[in-house]
Length: 308
Image (cartoon, rainbow, N blue to C red; front, side):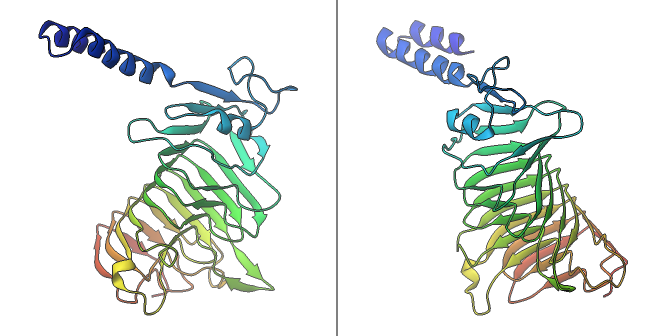
């Protein structure tokens, strides 16, 4: 296709030879520069990031990436464990995202002993095919402070704060993932830990959040909460939020008082809740809408076995 356009432009003399050469070189270099890198912490010595000589840590791989690159993390059949907290160092762009993914059908577990597994402040990323195990740490598993980020086919589990905290961010997609067991219990008392939390008190510009086809289960707070403070101006509410095709399950023993709601909207403006299943919220209301939220649409949802 590039060669075809190049030939046409030359024949019609729309570009000088020098300009046409520049056009072709830019197009080809853009395609060629995208690279695949590999990580495998089972190797004894870190290599150059190739398939046969992979990096030893995810962080080494992250630090090597430029827009368009893909970092493949090697795993095994049961779950190869990487004990790391990741720092991101580059953004992608609208035409070339940066990707971090578990390799093919291998299982990769990213865990740690303290803090969040990562706080992504960069833009245009795709993160997929990983198990993120927060190992009962009292910190959010994933914090999102960038834009145009997709989380896909993840399992995020086992924490005592939020599973995913969307803070200063927009154009975020969370899809086809299993987010579960974020339970903060202190001396038998339930304290909020949400599977997904959209924190409008941190940014007045959270917009275009898509939460699609996930299973969300066992959160001592809410499955999804759009948080806002009393008296917050409605112009600062989260806008254009789509919650479609998800399954919300309480998942705890009935009447244990360890969970709250499937959905709690405190600061939403234009929210679509469509074709979700929500069941088993026997300790409280299944859905709460409050604090002046507006333009909230519910359609095609199945809600059952809730307290009220």
